[in-house]
Length: 207
Image (cartoon, rainbow, N blue to C red; front, top):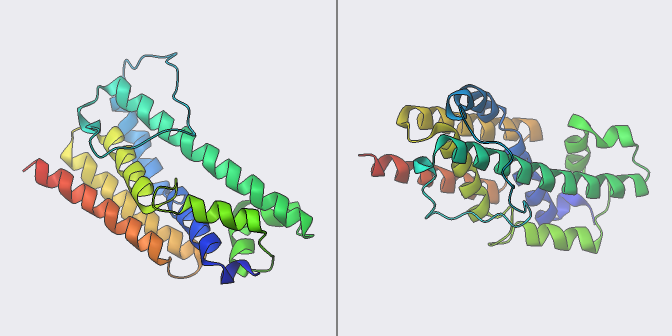
């Protein structure tokens, strides 16, 4: 089965790329975090990043600077762990099918997946389906909340900074589509809409 014929794996991959491509968010974070993390306490135990849960009831904007800094670090670590797990899984599959390690790294990694020139085993397909399910780590609900929580943790309760973060999110989605070489699938569009709704709700709550 070719990967470009398997929507579960395709959507899983593109959703991951949409989030990881948000270089604009990282740029904004680098500036804002200098202000938000002053005096942040160190040495706190981080939560189990495979079990991090995100709730719309969590008032991220009301957290202290140190709490927001901790949340940002937790979100980044959680994302890095999930990305590492996925890339390791796909790289091992590539190598089993004679695809060189160099082709399975960097930009070539995504192009190799987009090419569809490899087969997908049952386990990989099942993991992809679970990951993008309604309650999955890369599903619409968790992904959109994670992006918003990251933005809110960086911006604090500053509306103007939130607008900067939203602009960064918009650029991130555009970059992901360009990097992939085409339109993102419906799950990414749904995630994009869900994130936009969270920002709209935030602005409405601030009058």
